[in-house]
Length: 280
Image (cartoon, rainbow, N blue to C red):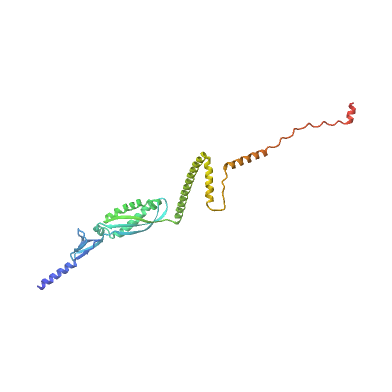
């Protein structure tokens, strides 16, 4: 009886030592005498054969991995420094355990080389504004090696693009010039529309001359409502034109010279007395 109790206790201890717990975010890969068992242990309590089985737990959560900044020259010969962030998770624990020694380090190296490659194939404007296509290109480049390691790429994004100071100054000047151009175009468009409206108003006032006088009186009322000591009286433009025409006529009359007197015949030369006596 005592022997039976000892055997039962040893069997229970042997079974207890083979009990393992797999968390919800983990999967268990079991090795029996160095060989991988065909099935992956799901979350919960699992039983191993003591001294024969060894289980390695693999995290299947999404891993966020920052990719260090990589320096490169873009397609349009601009030196930039680009860093990114990679999101991936393990979908095949056996491949991630057996086919690659450290899938996290392997994914980091592939991400760095792919990022440098995408920098050389892109232009600066694409890195700054057209990042969606670059993200898709990086994801395609990473999917091929990741599939062989049992890893799925959720997404990869470019986080920051560092430019040289000289390039930043050039882009700032370009943006300032573009804003100045738009401001001038808007101002000129406003002046054009205002001139068109003023031309229409002038045409309407030309049809009714009394409208001009009413407008002048309205202007006087608006100026007088400010309670100031200055009174502005509009001066008719027609009166100014009359004074201008009168001044021009006076200036033309003063410029005409007086007529010269008719020339007179020269007096006859006087005859000496002696010459007159000899003639007689």
